[in-house]
Image 1: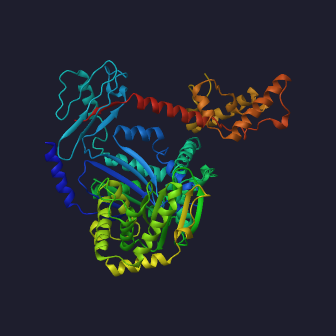
Image 2: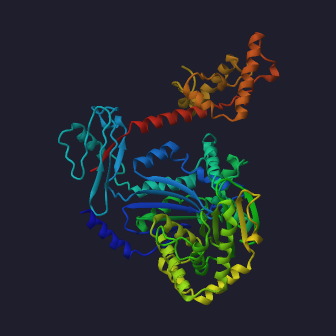
Image 3: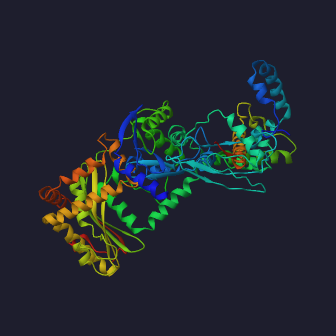
Length: 498
Length: 127
């Protein structure tokens, strides 16, 4: 039975197309149908770290997500989403702030809650039953029973009969009195997410997000790879995209800064709602209702990105790390993605060394990862090298020579394999919900067509001449070299051949 | 018995124009007769704070408000030692006598009630 259900879903997944974007009262709405049993809802706001007026404000706003709003307190938000079985999360990127809710695709067979006193005599308030039941779209039902205290009550799946419990009949009578019996999960979670955007209170006593912010910063500081990437952005772009995703170690932001930033970015033109597993018309209707009275202004601007490049080094703990990369200006291109895939030394077969020339020449204990970070008007591509102190210079030289070789021209076979890897990376990213939302988020604000087919067909257009032209242009620009670790012994850019 | 946490007819009076017109002068006379302003207090300094609700609400005051509250307490303690009110120019004016703590207490009471509600909810499967 299980296998039959799974294969039916696979058929649906193969037939899905990507999202169509509908503009609903200024807010862009996209709905994707991927046949999964869970739905998700993501509100993307153009409030990434590139738009922050002060260091760390974007991170603070992300940590303030789901605190008190005009409609619900923080406790109410958490308990309500817990009750309806959803997972709330907020994440910050350089371009977007994403508020997400994931929940089961339960339809109208929902639970409602009633306070004990509304259920009439005989229901004691020390009887707590938390029970969830979901009907999947193919009609099968999962129900989870939990009993607490001295009373044991079982509410069995579809067609429950109240054979041995008089109280159940009372509950059934109570449910008939409910004002809105057809509340759907998507209604609830659209409401939770959008009420933060439209009516967050930012109360002073909830500014205990300060420990969350410093946790984020501390976790980032302990990871040399993150330090290298953040510093690389700062060196490469100098402003806008250069702003770090994390707050500084001693931030000077106050509640007022966060409120001002929120007022600036939470406007209709700046917001996109992406739903997976929710009907497009239903989602548009909900978004319309939620944003009916929202503010509407142009939102924050970020100066157009310029790539500078340079060299820098900082003290760090952990493995010695070096980032060797180059940035491009303009919208991300398939050629640069192919270059990143060509340079990628990770093997396709586990526990093997792989066929990449980098992997063959690396000294023992060193590791190299290819980094490809596309943004709306720039991208950063390169290699992140981590090695013990003595081996870092050699590993770095190997990485640099691979980069230069790519510029000088590669064989048709190598190009075909690089294109295939890049295509696969793009396609498999779109398999996961997070990847789908990211792919949509990259295109939804610019108004370009969102379809997996168009993304993949861009790779088909990459031929040897286009590739070598793009690679040569890249290598001509000033490289970005960042080293994190023991400052005294880290190699310099010219020692590696940059 | 008195204070934001107890039974009060104040909302009833404040919502009615007629009652407000008649009760307000009486209330003002009472506040003067109570003479707490002659010791530099605001009304919310006198709210009974020896309970967890008001302690939580006190934690929500700004540092400035907390400092001023402590100052008023200290000044009034000195006046109590001297068995006399403070100099007339330092008395709290009716305009200054703002209920700075009561909104916080009301919020805390509301939040406590909400937590109790969520903790005792009964979830019913609608079928």
